Image (cartoon, rainbow over all chains, first blue to last red; front, side, top):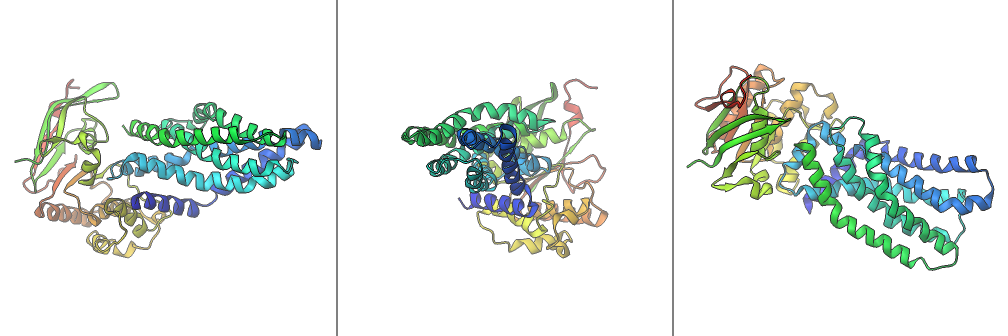
Length: 221
Length: 211
């Protein structure tokens, strides 16, 4: 456990000092959402109707934006090789990196989301459920993304390949994340959708560190 | 009684057999020097020894148990130095090394760290961020990393790359000290320099298809 923490501490440290990554992700998120009123016109009802979907899609894309660097920086300078040679299970190392990814991208997205919801004229009832759904959904995005990030190790132009690998796997989170918000706005219960989102998160927690570690091993060979 | 042995190793990489039928054995305090022309498989053999890749055939054993059975236990007893020096540009030398020691010991006390830096002549760099280091200094930091936390088996892939003469000497002193305390070293090298009473393997001999 203390080793898990020391990887997290080091990566957070690196993220802080290298600095701008988190801010850029949030900035991308904001800009991507702000584009929609320009594209579809400032009609409040239309914006309110598409708000949950737009916010979720923008969140998916921005969380994917920083995935490429998840293992790549450590891969390039030989740190990843060395991380695989420590008396720590590689699964734990991968899990630590996923946590740091969520802390530096998922969490800032959740913090920025209410502002964008106001901008998109999301009905008041939807705010709480949007945040809960993002809280359950974004860790899943980081977990699934870690597999993709590990699979592209060593390939050129990995970024595009990564989006092709990862985005289809994001679809279930998108569907249930959006429909939870839509349900509440339409006056229904959000419980089934939130339960399914939690289920997906638990499954991802159980499977993704293993798949990610296997992919990292493959990438190092 | 050799501690660390490999029997009948076959290495397969990038669609060809790199070497086949290779054996090695190391007892406490011994050193093994890998020789051979570029591309003959020195690095591949070191990676097999470290467990970064698996041999196509043959086994690598530690005290008569295969290392692939418990990779984490094997990781705990080895130090590996590859081609790259994992020194993060934004962390200071001390922070860089302390992170790696904390992964091995599970704590972050660094009593042996100043001594390790001193041994390699980079005590004055302790608080300098990695981005200001020259290639040779990065290599010394990487070497200080393995001095800072003890492990019985050192796997060094051309460790003297980018080192000047003084640092080369402190490297040799470090290896001698490690062996005196019962440690084992495997070094790959195409330079002429040699270690005192070390075993040597010429990997060129084991090439399946001689060029």
